[in-house]
Length: 152
Image (cartoon, rainbow, N blue to C red; front, side):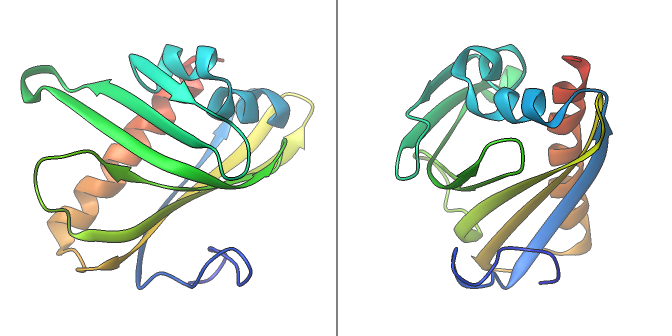
């Protein structure tokens, strides 16, 4: 997968969805929004537990309205302040997911003192998605990144 998860981090996933946005904030502030549980709770999830270190784990509870609560869990694999985050990503309980070995890679590129290009790549093995499911996955990540951008 071009520009995706790199050799020493993990094997290349079979499938991926990516979203890129420019956020009006310095790269260090965007990085903090992904790694500081207090800030994460303002845009990512209503409840955040995170041991932010390589090998540390996280657990986020996201209010999904009538659908209930989604719980995302994972482990931090790469933490490069102001530049890059790689983490596993999964859900707790419930339905069988088409995603296996799911990883997120968040790459930050400074475009100046107050602008950052953020690229999120969600890569996984297992089942591929049809066009509608791929569009829905992309849309969900885009909405999450839009919520992040609203912080700034």
